[in-house]
Length: 525
Image (cartoon, rainbow, N blue to C red; front, top):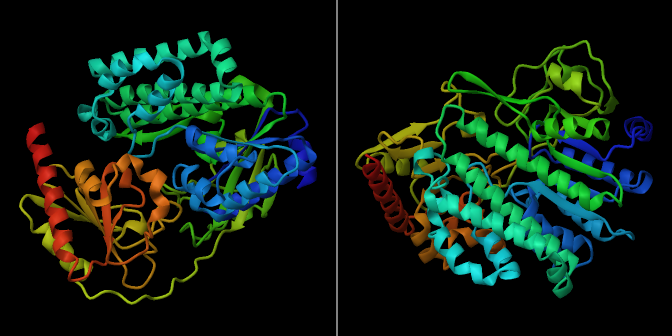
């Protein structure tokens, strides 16, 4: 690897970006760790930035620099997208803390998920307390109830361009201005590190309000515009991180290929092709030769549900390991999905190197467990589907559903199919939703959207507080009402294999969710 790195680093880049073609394949995380160790030892790198929320990553950075706390707590609270559960990420954090020279850990993503764009309350609360406590009553009034901020799926249901949201965005910008104008006093009263932390919070608040404004704007290209806002936000965060690290050496950046690639992002939306500048495209334009890219490539992986590449494809002819400026007589493989992106001709034409993992993680069979006496999944599905005004969709291969969704059932009010109020799932989603261990024979999970109030009644805290309390739950436990491991912050709960005595409670929650969904449809009508 050292010879290849010497070639890649010959132009003294500020950022070396390493991509992965899918999330959840831990072999890429292990190769990233190996690469970072070499870069630290031999090439002057002192920082890494990964595709995780910038604000939550501050806790990880505190820890690796010798701060208080435990590794378990940092892994639970310092990563977004559920990335803290990966063992290779845990190994990285532990290794960084034990190095003789301080290293820096950064996240550069936005504080959002695919179906979640939360209220900016927590960011504005901290900044107000630091820079302008007297401004809080007005900002609190403008924020209002947190739950309406969670709606990101339909422009018409978003409050992102409401008069109070527009005013709030102006007030957030005012706070950032006060933060800069008051920097001499604030730093003297606290510290430069505390001021920098509040700068991250203030920018997160403004970015979140900008994202919510885009959520509220209708149009066939809406999803592509949201992706564009997120990538631009990522690029800005990485440029800010470089300002912090400029005197300490280059930064290793790790993310999905689609965020670090040099060419634009593209997707089909409503039958039309949409295009936007990804974070890597922006950084490449701004940094030129000081942005160096290693594109990740995956041959096959049972764990990531990627089959063996066909003959004559890029993945079939590449050797395992790092190849600088590859020139391949091959073609793109046709079996990509919404989760796995094979190499394309544009990748080879625009990247500086390919890191190819020929064989990913193998699947380990989960042991069988004693199942509680209770109804099978299809019996519960039949009961939910028989409730008034409820329609059922069962995901199949024929409808184009990904393999890990086949057989899953989705229940919604007729005419509102894009907003299910309950689901029954039979499979884990590799790299995203695996904590329930649904690979165990006969295990299934009932998911129900109970909303904020019922969630709070069940668990004693609001859905938005779940990320800080994740460690208190065993998401693989059977016959227990649990916060949903992924969508709990949006008010979802779940039960794995409810037993006979648990079913009355499950039915109560499902009926509550059905009634709330029907009421939402009626209000929109």
